[in-house]
Figure 1 (spheres, one colour):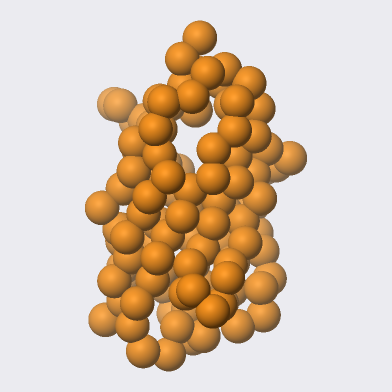
Figure 2: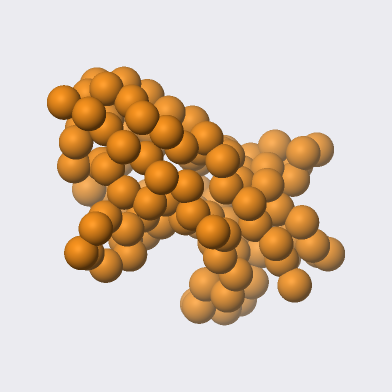
Length: 119
């Protein structure tokens, strides 16, 4: 069982930046890949970025490459998503997720944190 708690969302102006945090708890986190997703109103949930807890290897969606940086801090069991140059189209609920390295399905999800970008 992995518990995930997101924080760091809020209201930001166009062109601004935010850093989201995901605090994880559970045994053997090094067996997991951590991911960030987002869901805008009326749309599906989209993958943004992921990081392997053990190696730090990262993957990003092509549509936001250059705007996003995912990182982890092992001593705090926390994963971060740095988002830069935000636009109103980035307004969404952002979710942290976890899956075992050998699995394809994201098994654990946080409750989400709202990001609103104003024009």
